Length: 506
Image (cartoon, rainbow, N blue to C red; front, side, top):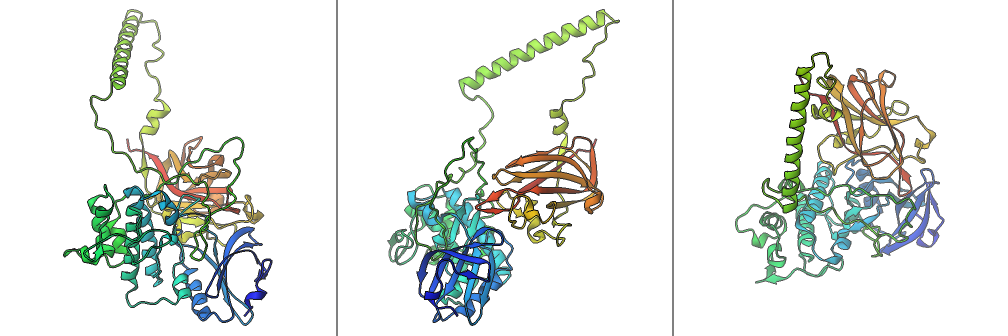
């Protein structure tokens, strides 16, 4: 195994990962920012001192974590252990940790709940694979520069610190409860401060509930927090004993949404320093990040409204009366002049009325589509693009350039509608990074040659509507990337959600 002195900036691991910047060191584990020279992307690399006692456990945990497919969990790319070196290579995540987000005080309750709900769902997926976190802290929960939630360090951090437990589900549920407590109050429900957050206040020897600390916390979120991590305050209420139970308790909260970004004509200078948010990283100045989107506002009741609304309503009524009068006059002329041709008597329906008649049809299944490569493109998470949740996503593999590394002509997401039907349009919510080129292909066979291109869109970003130029019918709908945008030095296509519209039944 390499000694610490032998591992220096410029060292290459596996003839691929070039170590660049030493981020931090702690108890024989060193965190580096590195470059994957094959895919030209930044990665995080942990190396270990010769006397680090848990190298085998960390590498084993990392290899197990690499099989997790939930995009809200840190991706592990490589892990190796031999006589010369041991290392773990994982995703380089940029954004703001929960600690960063709380620098200005508690979050809006819906925002805090939405972040933790996403984390709970992600950890529930990890638990299905018998992988646990066991050391959830505010630094492990991130709102990324890609406007997604990311949970850092599943399985790997516990192995790194030698943490074990007989009740992992309960421990991670309590950890999620503490994160929710922190988000709602700006305090940490522990014996001492955590990551700069002050310890939670106490009454009669036990922690105050969120509502006792911060005004305006909804009762149901107070109850969820108590059931997850404050046993002294439960008063007969059952504990939330697993991440899946926490996720279920928060299932109805609003989720953080991808934030549309308007790109100026003159590119802005990128922030030179980012908070990486990895467990061992020192606190750094956070990048200029858009705030979390505000919670959805309640729908205003129909009725009186403001004086401006009343004026507008009066104008609309007068216009309607005028239109009726003109219509009556035109009809009168038509009746009085039978030789005249009433040109507008059978006007075709406008595009707006036609689209109003279309209805959303949920695909039966989705799969990643790579017929020019290995046949699969992350099919394990393809269903996240049709689950109705705009916070989950499917994305392509990562490529070395916008043209898919010149490895293939395209990759995409293939939807099986269950039966042949006419396609009015397809609305795909992409990432906000510009530069994607996509095609809409439709057909009755899942073979690429049988799918006909019916719409194209260049430099696509955000919510993109693909409307066939001519009537298109088929069982299979393919969103086909021929170019993918860049994201923090890597290239991949992203689809948060797809909605397929078909003409309604007559």
